[in-house]
Structure formats: C-alpha cells, structure tokens
Length: 384
Image 1: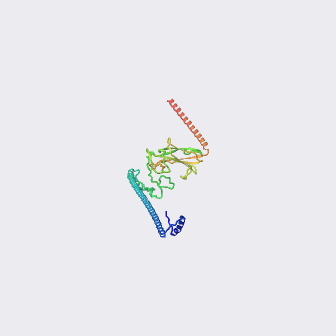
Image 2: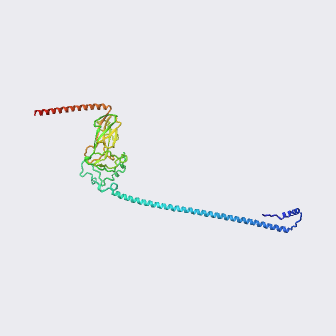
Image 3: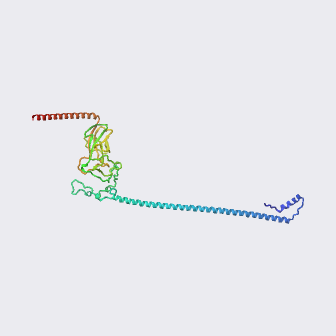
C-alpha cells in the first residue's frame, strides 16, 4: 500500500500529534525532508515498478495477441492450403473423370464405327438391305425405248440402265410416296413387284345385288362378291404403308384384299358422263378372308332411292391395284348396276311370283314333252 504526504502537511500534523500525546517530539526539518525524499523515491520506484509491470503485462498481452494472431493466420493459411489442396484434388479427379469419359466415348465410338462397318459389310452382302443395285437384277430391256422399228401412234418409253432407282429425282418438287396417302401427288420409288402367271390372274363377280336388281331403298342389305385367284385378308396399314412395298405372291397367287364402292348415277342407268371418283355413296374395304370364295360387305343403313353403280377394287396387300402379266386380259374387277326404290318389296314379290309361275309353266311343258316322248318310245317298241 502506498502512502505519501507533503512536507507542509507533516509540519501541521506534528504539533497536533504532540499535543494529543502530551509530549513534545523533537523533529528536525532535515529528517523530515529526508524521510519525505525517501518516501517520494519509494513512491516513484513503486510507480515505475507498476508502470514496468503494466508495460510487461501489455507487452505480454501484445505478445499473446500476436501469438494468437500468428496462430490464427497459420490456421487460416493451413485451411486455405487444405482447401486449395482439396480443390486441386477435385480438379484432378474431375480431369481424370473427364479423361476416362472421353476415353470411354472414344472407345464406344470406335466400337460403334466398327459395328457400323460390320453391319455395312453384312448389308453389302444382303441384297435386301444393301444400298447398292445388284447387277443381277438390272433389266436390260429397260434401256430400250420400244421404237426399233418405230410404230405409228406409239410413243417412246422412258429408258433406264439402273432400273429407274433414282427416278423420283426427276421430280424434285414432289414428295416421295413413303407410305402416306398424299392427296396432292407424290412419286413412288417402290418397284411393282412380283407378277403372277396368266392362269393366276384374279377375277371377281357380284352375286348380290345382281346386275339390274331392284332393291328397297333405305333398307339394309349385304353386298356379296365371288372372288378367284386372290388370297384375300391381306392388307397393311393404309395410313403408314400405302403403296410402300412391292406386290407379293403366295403359291403364285397375289396376296391382297378387295374393296367395294357404290356410286349414285345422277342421270340414271343410262348415264354416259363419267362419275367423280371423289364422290361415292358407300365404300368398304373387304379386309377379312373370303368365306367359300365369297366376300361380303354390310350396307347397314341402306341407301336412298336412286340408281347406282357397284364396282370392286381388287388390290395387293399395300393397296395398289393388282398387277397381271399381260395387257390383253379380261376385267380383273366387276361392276353392276342396280336400283333402289321405295316399296320395291312388293314389286320384287310380284316379279318373284311371275318368275315362279313362268318356271312352273316351263316345268309343266317339259313334263308334257317328256311324257309325249315316253309314249312315242313305247309305241315304237309295241310296233316292233
């Protein structure tokens, strides 16, 4: 504990102390001054020591702070170094991953190219996949225009030495007939296909209605058509594969199906003006196989009164009209003309009764003739 007083204070306090104690204490001024000096020096020394201690403490605190700062800096530097190392390691890993992926991609590309080369080699060996025209199927007759010698009225044919394989390039503005029913026109690159022998040319004939029949209007009826030399029930997707493959045969007979179309004759059965192919009263694809050589189509709602033409459209599987080997041949399709009338049932019944009566009369006449012949034969035998 520090205690310091000035000399004047001591001079005032000493007499008071002497009075209190009842005695007189002789004090010399020099002693007081000495003592005061010693105390002052002690105080200065204490203050210096305190200052030194505080400075030491401050220096220690500064050193501690610097040490902490250095340690924090070192920690920060280490963390930064660790993060940089991690980033470097991640970058190296990413680079390695990218290199591995690139190598894998390169190897896959090489494998794909190898597979493509092998597939192309196989395709080159498979004529149905190859993009190269096999010389064995080039038709040399296609190079002739048919005018050697010329024939009056006969036009020259287009010619080709490669089977017209790029013919559609001559009409670059037309789309390819690639299975769609393109109503604005197109160019078909598919070949005609296989053509049957003459004895296997298809033919059809309507059974119901027969030519000239009169049927009731607005009444359901079933169209029946006999068909020969067409393996029916074969039809492809008309929205995706229309005209998209060649004609095919099975056992020499065309694979295909048929259609029926009914057109109203605006001018009656005597109409001589062509009909509009885009307008028809009834159309039906006969996609099922024929039963007993008969194809059928139900006109479920009947048709209004009028006079009509009914025709067949016999087709290959891809809907193209059937192709046969010769130009001179009978009709491959059939057409009949019939009438739909209101109240035609009664008329048909009367006609049927009349036909039955005529048949009965004919049968009676035949029976009478047979009887007369038998009697004449018996007479001749009796005369002999």
